[in-house]
Image 1: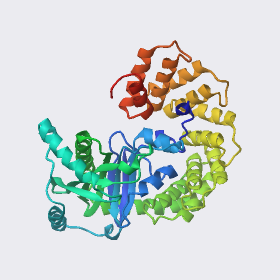
Image 2 (image 1 turned 180 degrees about the vertical axis):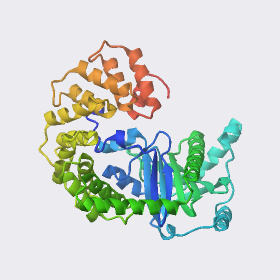
Image 3 (image 1 turned 90 degrees about the horizontal axis):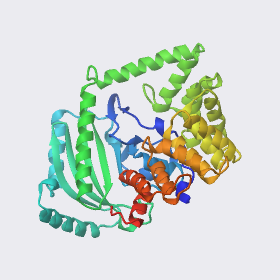
Image 4 (image 1 turned 120 degrees about the vertical axis):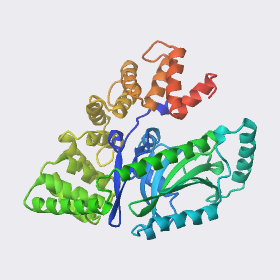
Length: 456
């Protein structure tokens, strides 16, 4: 029953998704909307950062990494993620402060086209099955000859005045929690984007199995590229340096108020130093101002401090300090802190392991409708952790989360109906839930359907 053990989210997933994020590249600021259905997960769970950084060239800096909710939950729970599909944003470190004119960017595009060549695949969706099969056979042969870290360029497949999109295969050692990394080949597409005179990379990536992975990565990078360009064009004034100037003015205003004892201003100034927005990123300054606000009862500042100590961000990782700050934040009703406290009590991080306390904190979040917390409640009732074992209650909480789209909870409901635990045994209902979870890539549900004779 290991698949029904606690799904611990080290930082609240409900807070992980970002509609857009601003990144400062020198004196320019660019806005990057999150890909549809994916979650900003870098800097929130250490395990994600370690795995994500494994594929970053030494010449580049990761700006953001996006994975689906299922993988984020697995890493947060200490389980192996598949990272079957993900997105990320990178910038070349040596060029992040450089302005590129339209002509200079066009020169870059022409040089890339000469280097990587034109598209070798075409639009597979418009080709005959025989043509697709022949091309895939050649691709598999090429991929089979790759060594770890090798790439095989497939060429430029899309270009606009502000971007150029390329595809490649990569033989990788990361992102295969099922032990099959020796055979792992990823399909990767890159969009080099030019906005506000800055150039940066967008990536979409999928484990390569068949032509659907090729069409998915190319389609998704186009959609994301278009969303990024549109978002930056819609910025009032379209002058990114003006946004940075505004941030500088905000930081100066917050500093003046914070020195006068304004708690909210101290919090906001600390968050600016933490993100490096309007001021140079400075963790020491962030600790000072966030600490001032946190000591005066600001729940958001306390949560930010807890996360710094939990992740070891600018400080030595210290679960004890993290626990203390998260406790202060939770006492102010901070939902994310309530989730994290539940996990820390469950794992015994910074405090003695206590399933009863873990249960109590998760229950607070679950009763506020957080699906991941509801799934945890189902797990704890199912396993008799922090509460008497009660399959009926487990089913009730799992169903709450499942009805909100939580894939692990959907699988759990299916298993409960298949086994008749807390519900009348009903294979038909079980399969319905398995199919919902499997459609989101939930591995256990996919295996259950195969076991029951349903081809996937």
